[in-house]
Image (cartoon, rainbow, N blue to C red; front, side, top):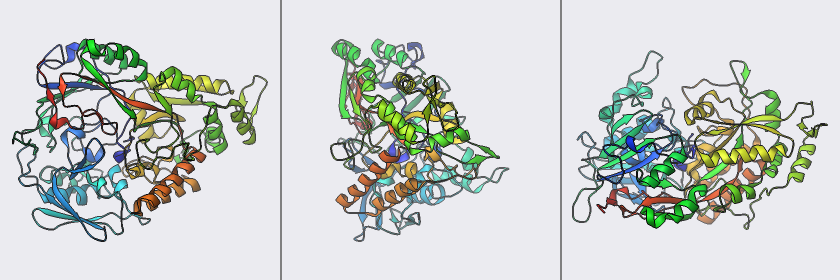
Length: 588
């Protein structure tokens, strides 16, 4: 997806789903096959945008390999210690005191200390001069206050919230940063008065200059071709026998722009893993035994795929971000509801997903305990072109002599729908949407574009009509707070530019947007799980009524992994490699 873990729903995070791809066998490091050497070879569709975790707002990114926080999640979404050895929650639930593991080190051999933890939060993530989406998920209550972080002694650090904050512990898995490398870049400014941190650890940085604390370090990066990670010799994990983990020496990411190519390379042995899209499932299932791999089915995925209109009515440099004619359409809720009725999602499931999916109606992940299904009362939009036409009429639209939809001023309804190129499922969905909407008199200019260009339009220029994208998800809805907060860095359908980006004027925020924002704040304050769930139920009903996002299909979580990779404990929440430190490579 364009994709993003919900915790960094950024664009995001957003949190846009990217199909896994792979380039030619000749590009594999040191070999013509993934099945040699103690390494795992997988792939991504595009180059990373940054090597700075605080500035990252997209997935995949390198930080799952090179970064680690105080806590982590296992395959079931349960919280486990990472850099922290243990923690104590105060009786009033407002404070958590972490005890750091002893003798931790950075990848350059320098000690990793409590001072690094305090620096990471107080000087980076809480620094208003740093435009990081991470800050959004740590803002608390209506006042949007941040926690206080205080060093207790050389092994303990205390986090205190101004009020109870239910998702607090889970939100502290963000990467800890090295103060000895990055602190000078916070205080030093460039010629525009901005912290040098903002230009530190970009993709032009030599990998040898990066310092990390994860299981791997970035060893090399060749733009447009590959990233190679090598085992971090200072990583803290050891097995029961005292042997250092991870056991795998290298991870290779190939960069390719076609899932068709990735399929070829997986089948030929040049790739160890492959995200199985429905159009490839039947072929791969037939070859499972002969191909020496297993297809893991985790059930409903945590991700979402949706269509969204640009609702931003603001201006930049005196020019509207969205054509005012189109903006009137997009900001009419009946128009959005009519579009939802005009999209044949069952046809998508049958033809594009090969039956391996179900309608998606909620922004909250299906595996989450806070998810509301249709059977439990969530409104849905089954295909009904007649209902769509009735809603258009109620909204002031009409049909001309050519049976084309026009607005009340006679303007033909036509808009551009964009998605990331190379994702065959997404491209097929866009093509069908174009066909479906043509049947109700709407011309759609469907335009797949490069992932990097799509991100730029969403996050910087803000100039687009409609998007077809997706986010990853997870257990905790608050991990998507920066999407639903009206000032959040990933509130893409009506985004407020973040610090350091050109601002806009005359932005308008709808009452329902504010209501969802308020409810997310309330849910984070509520410690009673049933009451908390009821609040999230209300948010889901509001999103389905107002449709800032028209959700499409929830696909099954399917992934193929070569049998040579041992120890896979597949998780629909965190994927095939969540326990990467425990995995081994068989010589067979």
